[in-house]
Length: 212
Ligand SMILES: [Mg+2]
Image (cartoon, rainbow, N blue to C red; front, side, top):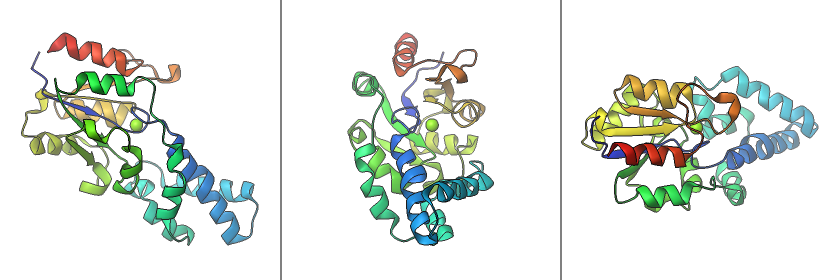
């Protein structure tokens, strides 16, 4: 097995819980839309979610808060993000795992979240990471094999010298694996378990320490 030099983490669902994004997309945006359109919060929520689903997470617009503010005719997304900042929450094992891997590996974040979100989502853990790569903001793409190859190039390593973990089977397992990266699927939720899925970052940490 190749020697791993860089360890890459997905962000949302892997290091940080969905709470912040949930508050932005499913609470504050619907309430602003309700006020703008003069409709009930319930109707606004249904309308907004329908539009999110019509676009879907295979299109880069889905991740882009500026696109949605424009589409819904809303102003000042910065204020909305800032108003939700207290909702940023990390999974319980995250600080321990990052501090134990830090120093042994070079750590990076490889996320589909945009830069507008990163300043909030990384707030308490940013110091562990050498770099954070946003597929949407930096290279206008989803987390494709070429996104992962670009990270390896930026870090001056071969793909087999990188390990990546994340909670999306497509974006965090199949795509990096196709690029030659050693990928691990994280299934915190029992519903998403596949053969070989890991249940927490503690299992990932144990795997990494086995192979170095
Ligand atoms: Mg994720």
